[in-house]
Length: 238
Image (cartoon, rainbow, N blue to C red; front, side):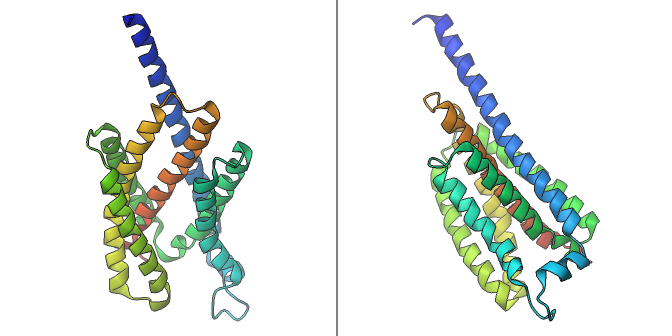
């Protein structure tokens, strides 16, 4: 086969791979930006009291539970239904997800000092970036590793829901420690999966655009959960 043709194909594959990851990170950083702005703007005692507490101030208002759990539903709809949904619909759901997550994250400004939040964000960025590079460059197949981590994550998720009602400090600490390992590991796993998708020239342009959005959502979710796990461990409460 002509060497020029091979080099041309390799160049085309690298270009579509770079474009794919540009889109993935654009979605991820866009979501972080939307969530961050909303969280900072709404992270005040006045906002929390007005919208998240019931009229007697003794419990959460229904909107609080909607804000906490609706992103889970939206995330599943995007990831499981992206092939059936239009790109416009996916983008709308993605923005809604980012905004709702921002409202949910606004509560951290009531619990932690701004300096602790900023420091943890940069620590998270460093850990996330390192594992993303590892996942992209490693030759080891991380499929079984990822499956194991997802099983641990399911257990963590159930335990976290239960602990919302128990308020057990030790259980929260254990969940946070496990979270750091699980979410850093899943970052490497997903980066390897995304690399494989980016180099698949057989994927249509439409599906590639949708998969870039789904990939950006997955990395955003991992970044936020790693950030929250580290924040609980590093402390810095008001």
